Image 1 (cartoon, rainbow over the protein chains, first blue to last red):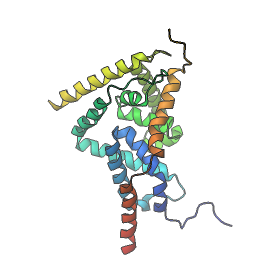
Image 2 (cartoon, each protein chain N blue to C red):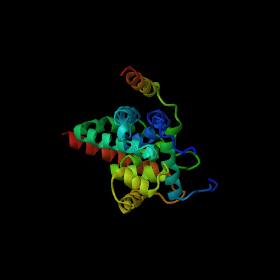
Image 3 (cartoon, rainbow over the protein chains, first blue to last red):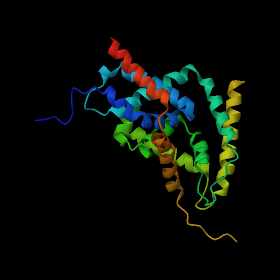
Length: 193
Length: 48
C-alpha cells in the first residue's frame, strides 16, 4: 500500500510552491515590497539549512511562516530605524483617492492597515487572508488560540476606527488615512530625534 | 445629484482588502532572485 505522504520526497523541493504565500505574509509584516522580498530570501535560506527540523507530513507552509516571522522579529530588534524608509513610500502615494465607485482603494486601505501593531497585522493576514485556521495561526505565532482571536478582533476594530467610515461615506477615508500617515510620520520623526 | 451606489459594509470591505493585500503577492510572479537563490542552494547541496 502506498502511503499518502511520500516520506522520501525532499521537502525542500516544495519550498518553491510557497514563495507566493511567504511574500504575502512578509508584506503584511514589513509593509514594504522590497523589504518583504529580503525577508523571504532570508527565510528560504534558513529553512533550507534547517530542513531536518521539519517533520515530513506536517504543515510546511506553517513551518515556513514561523521561520519568516521569527526572522522578522529578530531583525526588527536589530534595526528599528529602517521603518522610516517604509513610511516614506506610503507618503508617496498620499494623493490616492477612493475609487470612483466609492470603494475603499487598496492603497488607502494598506496605509491604514500599516498603522496597526505587528501582532494585529499578522493575525489579520493569517486568519483573514491566508486561510489559516485559528489553531494554525496560533501555532505559527506561538500563542494561544484565544490570543489570536482577540488580536484579530482588536485589529478589525482598530481598522474600523481608523477608517472611521460608515457605509457609503468613503470620502472621509482618504482624509483619515492622510491624517493617520501624517501622524505616523510625526511619530517616526520623534523617534529619530 | 449623484445616484445612490450599491454599498458594502465596512466589514466586507476590510475582509476584501485584507485578501487583496495578501493575494496580490501570492499571484504576482515570483522575482527571479528568489528562484535563483533556490537553484543556488540546490547546487550547493549537490556539491557536498
